[in-house]
Image (cartoon, rainbow, N blue to C red; front, side, top):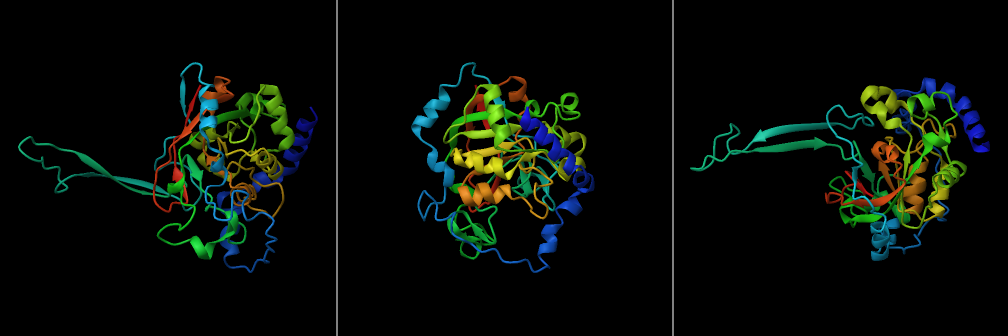
Length: 341
């Protein structure tokens, strides 16, 4: 197919960059930008205020409705449930310097002394964790353009060390809607090694042509308010080769992000840690898909989604359910969405 030949050419061109990519090298530009004077970007205001109103903080979640819930519920035929979250722990690969640690404490005097005449005992847990680790949702305050975020909010007006004053993930209502899974390993099955490994190579971008082809091949549609997930097979590296997992990834390109935004989707996710293609399509750009979805369009990003079971069952449509934790002022949240079919 033509789009496959194009993707092969892009992958071949990306090979040198992929070989050179490391956590320290490819993404060290973030640290470098703190010391170098970068040219200012002119904000043409074309992407704000939001179509949902100048005071809106929810973005695409305005598309939630009882009718959308009922539409999603009609997709339930077997009652089978799928956990889309991964187990998060101290060895979970994460974007540096994000870390996870847990301490188990015994109650009362710390020595486990039984309580009362009934000698009750128990344990508690103390967590020290970055919210952006494991399976996560990126809120609209996560990434912007030159310190301007969704709906034209400037960082100086809403970002505070103790929590966001706007767009905190604690404000998000439950996400109950129709979910769609697109299997990109089938769209790129002619790339070297994909059939054998069930995994796209790092640096493989999928855009509107590949998304349309996957939709057609799987006999599904993408509608307003849907959650769209991509299966790339990349998550398998998280356990077997965590350094390679973080060194790059296949993912969504900027044209694909704009196309999904034009369909008014609610959220975009994948079985990878950034959802977007890394190394990126344009040299010098870092994570361009994030601000395209979050800042410009108010569309949420779901990272490290466990799509393997859905893909194995060819479960292309399902009811998507997420009740995120309500940590006040949080930028992101560790999550475990559920798919039901």
